[in-house]
Length: 149
Ligand code: HEC
Ligand code: HEC
Image (tube, rainbow, N blue to C red):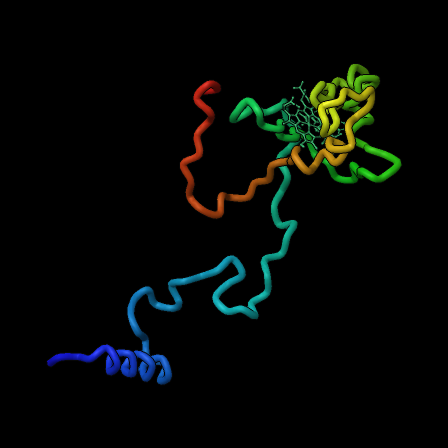
């Protein structure tokens, strides 16, 4: 039997209208992060435990902002005060036993060298993050940069 495109389209529309399953994948095989239906509750944040304090982690590529190897609960950054700089500034790092902020953090966006932390580096958590025990959402084959293997 010869099926005209028009007839086929009608059949598909009818099937959809009747709620008949069309082809694989079955609807319940597809799942979003939220769940199967749009009105499922979103996953609650905060169910993951931040890693315990540990020695600085090895970097995956040379330009990587180093991961934060300690908890940062309550380390606030406001217009007047930056808690991170309490330990990481060039005047405090020895006392705190912390790494001093990189020299690159004193350069403004035009490449001008400043004597204090550059505004573009003020919000440390834009780039530096802690790790949690969350499992990867998708499988991946990420490998360290060749120079660091
Ligand atoms: C109470 C002091 C203290 C405060 C506050 C603090 N840190 Fe640290 N931080 C340390 C110490 C100490 C280390 C080094 C740990 C070690 O060598 O074992 C460190 C390590 C780090 C490292 C790793 C450096 C490397 O070479 O791998 C990063 C990144 C970092 N901190 C970022 C931050 C950020 C961002 C904040 C603010 C949210 C912050 N820290 C607040 C004490 C502090
Ligand atoms: C725009 C991204 C960015 C911001 C914002 C930023 N950093 Fe960094 N940080 C980096 C990168 C990238 C590196 C590694 C390359 C380098 O040294 O510049 C680094 C390196 C460091 C290191 C390691 C230095 C070393 O000698 O190994 C420390 C400590 C650090 N940052 C602390 C901080 C703190 C504290 C703040 C906030 C006051 C901050 N950073 C803000 C990107 C950032």
